[in-house]
Image 1 (cartoon, rainbow, N blue to C red):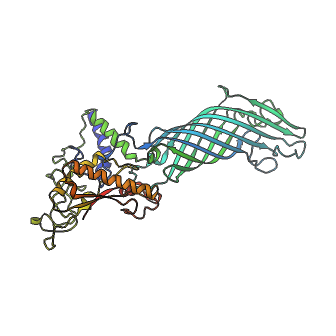
Image 2 (tube, rainbow, N blue to C red):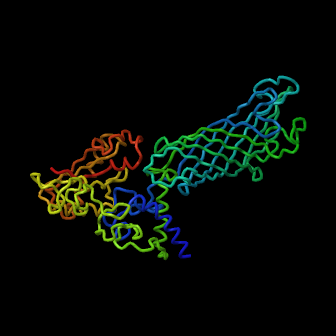
Image 3 (cartoon, rainbow, N blue to C red):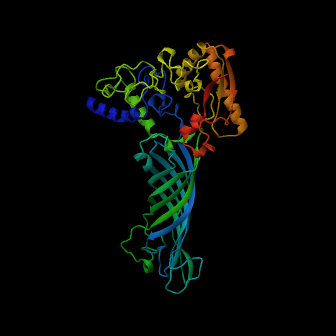
Amino acid sequence: MKLSLAIVALAMAIPAASYAQDSTAVSNGEYPNTFSSGSANVSPFTNQSKRFNDWSISAGAGVPLLQSGDLTSIKNGNGKNLFGYSAYVSIDKAITHAFGLKLQYDRGETRQGWFNTKDAAPDATAVGARTQYDAISLLGDINFSNLLRRVDNHSPFRWALHGYAGIGTIAYRAYQKDINGQRLATEVKPFKLGSMFMQAGTGLKYKINNRLDLEGRVMYVVTGDDEFDGGGDKYSAINKREEQVSDNFFNATLGLTLKLGKHESHLMWHDPLQEIYYKLDVLANKNQDIEVCKKGDADNDGVCDDWDRQLDTPAGARVDGAGVALDTDLDGVIDLYDKCVTVPGPVENNGCPTTTAGPVVETETKLEGIEFDLNSDRILPSNTPILNNAVSYINSSNGAYNVIGATDTRASDAYNQKLSERRANSVKNYLIKNGVESSKLNAIGRGEKDLKYPECEPATKCPEWKNRANRRVYFEAK
């Protein structure tokens, strides 16, 4: 049991190691790696902490074609196809990123036989029919794309293949028409427990935006009734298939899905890896005896000693996939101790060049990872260690700094301006509360006019990780 759990945990941990390694992601929670999608910053999938929506409503319309019956809609006696109409509306609940349930109501009319019942019978041998139906069903929804997709949502995927299947109850009226006129052939009204039917099919969804999806769907409906088409045992004259036990039809529809809730993304479009990380965290919280790293992780940098090339990484240092502390400017001073992260300099000057008139301040790099949730100025817990590091950095310098807030391109200019000011003041107040002199700080809001990724105008042109990077606060030397 221990060995099998270890294998499962290792398989789930590999994607985390591939995307981000942080020296404290597995230890005390400080200095989270804000440049990646590592599990240190992933919220569990619970109703209390979720950052996704899982309810939606769908509606659409289409064309049903009776395919299997004594009277059909496709290539009848006159060589023509008879098209009916259909519509559906459903309430949808996503259970996981790959499975959900739909409570769906369908209504429509199929047309079958030798001619349209709106027209006169062409001769004494011709028979036409139409069936008006109502149906209520419970459908399972499988997101095949998410079953196969095992990457985080840095990929701006907009297409998804879904599969549906379910059962329900159906009520209908079937009318038959011949040279003598029209009559009610058979009726199942109202809904009855015994009038069960099944339907299954597939749909291709396109994500228009975070609120709307467009979907083309083809379903195959098994009515379970030989008299649905207006023919059958009671009408021997048109009982062409005596062995027939069910009249079935195709239903092709085009519809829209409106995703409900306050969050940015819907669970069916959400990061599939977060569920894996959460399951791993749950196992760890239950104190299961799981051995992810055979030789352990001596320096707690998130990289197993089996493939760690630097076994004594200092605490708090960001590392690459091989466990080596990052040195962005390649000057021999790792980023943890480098006062000028992007400008090379000698070790004796803390990684800063000695030819400049004053110290080079790489302040924006210090706060690159201070990002915010949509429509929020709340500082996330994962960012407080970085802000605490900024407190020490600012107090050790003689300069003053602008605390600059920015937003993505959603909402109006006026609203984004106020939101960016709130974000800047939120960070400023945090720094003052933790020991920074207020005279050293000036909060400025730049709204959506200071985009880190200018190509995200509008926001729908970019993946969500870029829009999130635009919702930030950073420092600028005055």
